[in-house]
Length: 249
Image 1 (tube, one colour):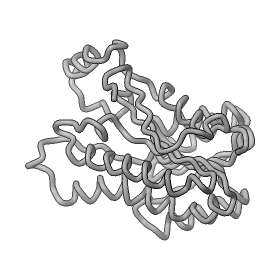
Image 2 (tube, helix red, strand yellow; image 1 turned 30 degrees about the vertical axis):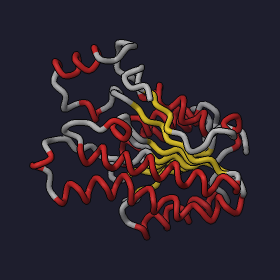
Image 3 (cartoon, rainbow, N blue to C red; image 1 turned 90 degrees about the vertical axis):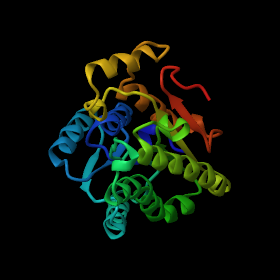
Image 4 (cartoon, rainbow, N blue to C red; image 1 turned 60 degrees about the vertical axis):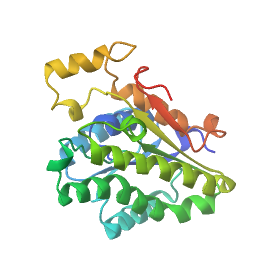
């Protein structure tokens, strides 16, 4: 497996939050980056500029991960540009909270299609490249709720639980081909996904975390890049929890 500095990395959902932090972390190693975004072009370009300043070659690309043809086109374009993809990081996601009885079929479609169908489409598109290379890294962004479930987060919890199962099964299937597949499961991370919390709810959440603070996107990005490194070659099928001790499996 190539060192991070020599890798071509596709990061899905790179325009904000954890995905943006992952992109910047990779750029510290001067990895070559394909930064995917859905609609936030301006934010994606801001992230790309930081990465270029750090010395990375960067290409930004818009695609709806729920659209199979758009995903295939994105991956094809990346391969035409650089000839290979070494690591894939899937950070695309949307939040959904509320009481179960108030959730709609459209809520279900939006959450499941973004977190699960999108992951399926991306890895299906990248699979021929990774399998031909006989090496690669896949890291998916999961969540603490994928393991514990979260009240008021039924659909999000179900989607992340599906991601966990996806990771564990695909890791076994691709291991003989030298490809590792893992997930990083953050706890409460200080991103815009927590913007809906009241001050009281944020304080209560922090009080429940043994390390007594919210996590940062950089806390998560460190482990994502590590899982893509050559040094992580004996780790696959794992759900790595980064939550300040809030949940200890």
